[in-house]
Image (tube, rainbow, N blue to C red):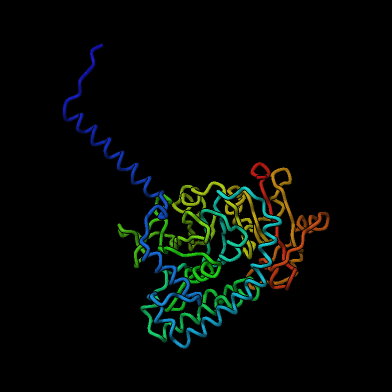
Length: 399
């Protein structure tokens, strides 16, 4: 057989196709790369560290851009409030939760991401229970808002914005629980808005160093992409779902970690792999999932797709009784530990409290462990009245 030699035009067209394919592959690869791969300047990182500390009432160095703003009389009151707030959080939640975590959380899952659907701004519980994840993903209806710019506010606006933050975290300090109505009202103030500043406060107070904050959206490929002040990508397209990406480091970290907060309602369509949001979630194949104060969403038949998505994705679940219905945890597939008590005899405004006979029986017939902190809706009933279920897939159990 005689080989046919292609002409010059054919070769050129082939080379162009190869180049285009390489470019497409490079762009696709770049879209999946974390912004953590980008080298930040020391000045840029310091700005976001000082910003989060300023919001949290933590002293900033005198050379900081925020130093002058700390000299307002009302800021001294903000420091006092935040210190008192954090003392209560440490005493009632963190200092009680850490020994429980060390005694009962299964080791060996450090490489897996952490996922918190219906999270609100509750980073404190999320991080304290799962302090070793390379990436944290939070999904909630509350809008993220941008990283605040307090230096652009006049003193009256700044005072108003800080006061709104104080009102958001107030009940959380007492009950380890966010009041939805308060969040919706105070996170919509015009000075310092959204869940982002609250999460930044919690990170700073937990001893984490915030190094970068970026508003993002989910593009059609399911990747996170930066958005501008108008809420659009560089090409002018506005994503359906937006949020924030926060880069941070713990004191002993050698690599930067990240938190992604997406403002979204958990619906069956949103978790389907044919949608941009579904493609985004598909990037996280195995997760350590936390659910608390989850409005019993997965107990409704119309959210069956959400329930199956969360249950199928999770290698570990930490939840109260408002998360995945207990009857879906098969003893052949899951190792279960029960903590606290199960007494769902309370009422919630706008939410039906589902009673679960299977969970009643399990608490009755199995030894449950004490739970020394408030968790989920049990907090409305007082100390040591909360329910916590720890479920680990048996095939994923680590030593």
